[in-house]
Length: 300
Image (cartoon, rainbow, N blue to C red; front, side):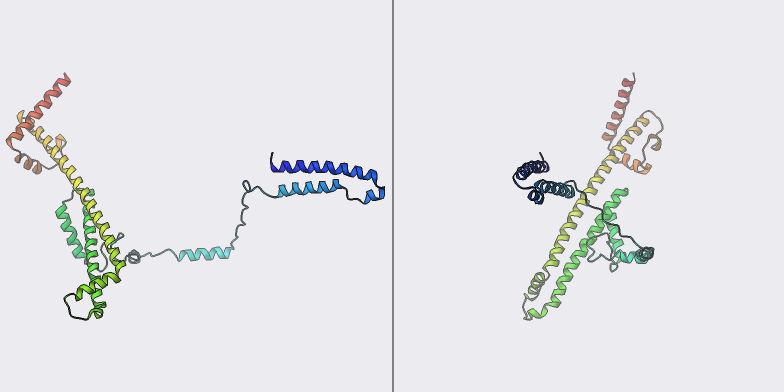
């Protein structure tokens, strides 16, 4: 039974008791006094009505819904002004302005997508990139992307080391007056003081150095694994082509790389055949003949 039902039952019991008391009192007292008396039945009914109305008015906190806030109406003039202001906030539009804004967040050039800063030597960066391409010899889009990442990461590492040395140079100029005595340890004391004063900057340099070193090692491992798999697949394809060539030669039949489904060039294949020892040639021919015999048995 709910609390509301309990209260209503109690009110009904009080009403019955009040009615009995009123009847008993009217029998003992004169009529005039009885007419002036406040009848308990009326009081009980008012109390019950007050409780009932209070329960109906007070919402249940679990089921009550939040009243909707009145919508703020906007005048046509204000709406037109808002639209006009929005047209003024579209950002840069020209290519030069967009390029300038893209460098707003560039501070040290150690993070973000910007690798070559406006103050960097673009020709030096291109030479740096060509050196990585020569060492890594990428083949295909994915290897080229990994090579680019290696070059960019090393470029940032070089910039980081230069910034660290520049900060020490700044300290030697800034704190030279603190260590005026001539001694072999003068510069060391200045460097120590610089590292203490700019401890936050040096700590950030070390964090970035660790992050870039991890990226470099991970990218290098990915590139080496990719190239190893590619070279292994190329070696297997060349050996399959050599088997088909040796079998065709054994049968005095013509042989064409493209017609047999091989995509590498003829000079590459000729160089591979020239480098095969006679023993390996014989092994590949025997493997091809065994494959033909196996196919014939399966067909029969």
